[in-house]
Image (cartoon, rainbow, N blue to C red; front, side, top):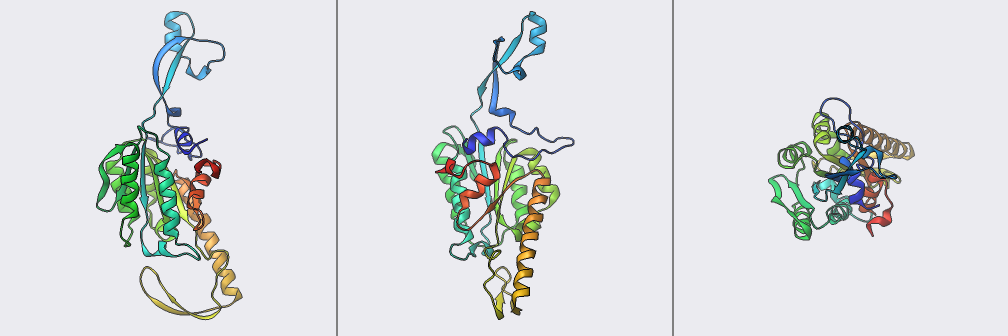
Length: 278
């Protein structure tokens, strides 16, 4: 199964309940074409009972694939995404974005959501549109990242049913407003790739160490022993797991973005083999 097929089937998309919530799939990615007589082996879910009652013979709906999708993406370019043990998280994010836009077919459209608005302003189809959107995100300068403002831009510019990818770290994810997240998930197919703390498994500091907050520039002096390193690991895991639960509760499928394999985050989010992207 490809990423595009998984999107059409609404694979791993959390179900939202309540007024205005979407179904668990995007209509299976098909649109109605015509009626014909039912043939043994046809999907019984396609039977049109109203037409059957009128004709007196079982009638089934013939469906054709609705191939036009809109791929949109938001990507964190703040300083914290420049961190990494061997490779910056931003590079892994670029890989995920490239795979996302690369999943489209010839009629699909692509659009990047930036602080100054969507790029291109009118989503374009095919490879040209995918390249424009990908390079727009890749070319964004490092700076402050306001996830709520970007979600608002997405909500105001994207057509209903668009597939929206958000790539950011825990710091920004914690600032996301739950009401916004849930509203976006009701209108679009939302996928959230959460960047993993590069030092979650092996915090490298020992003894007294000088720390610099990568976002604010604040300098601190702290002691790190085994107890502190263990506490850091537990806190990082709890933070990550809590954010994933919260995002899923708001209607987003989720994947963990590791610095070594950005594309793997998409494979995890959709539950498809990593090899589907190679």
